[in-house]
Image (cartoon, rainbow, N blue to C red; front, side, top):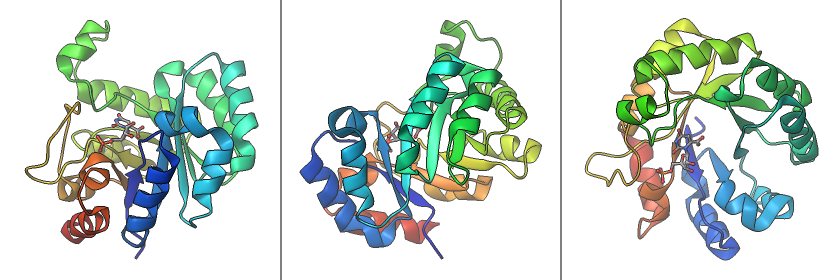
Length: 224
Ligand SMILES: O=C(O)c1cc(=O)[nH]c(=O)n1[C@@H]1O[C@H](COP(=O)(O)O)[C@@H](O)[C@H]1O
């Protein structure tokens, strides 16, 4: 079975990005390329990484007015990513237009509440209610907009999936037992994320900062 792990290649260094991806490519299901990589290398960089043969998750977390997001999605369509992110808080029309502009088989998923935020951070942004409420509310909005799924923490995925059984659920903020949380606040283990219903897990530093990324990915894979 294909691994559910997408490794987050968060580096602006192309040689390092390729080295990590090459070392763990047999134990992950895909590569997640985000802002750090994209700002440094753009579309040619994404194409170069795609040559390694793994599915590409392009995590640009688009968040702007509908027209701007739709045009940005159109402009990156030739990359044909397997997964693409937008922010659910951009609203329904923005999500609808992003989905309409994306290649038909690209899964467009909406980031709900970043895993680096906790309840206090949410309150500080002026949003009432718990993380659970916020994720379930934004998941319903993403579903209504015709998206394929959402990004949320492992703590909310079971509730979101109960409300949207056909949704695709991306779970970052994943840490093996005893691993450093770093800037992540809503953290679960890989096993907990899968048991709760994650479709895929996004894992960065526990693999990329390991002395041997291949063994780290293999060891995490063995726990799920
Ligand atoms: O959309 C994401 O992938 C994402 C959403 C979120 O809420 N939290 C989150 O950490 N991510 C991404 O998941 C990765 C997590 O990396 P590590 O914390 O190093 O495992 C990073 O590339 C983040 O950009």
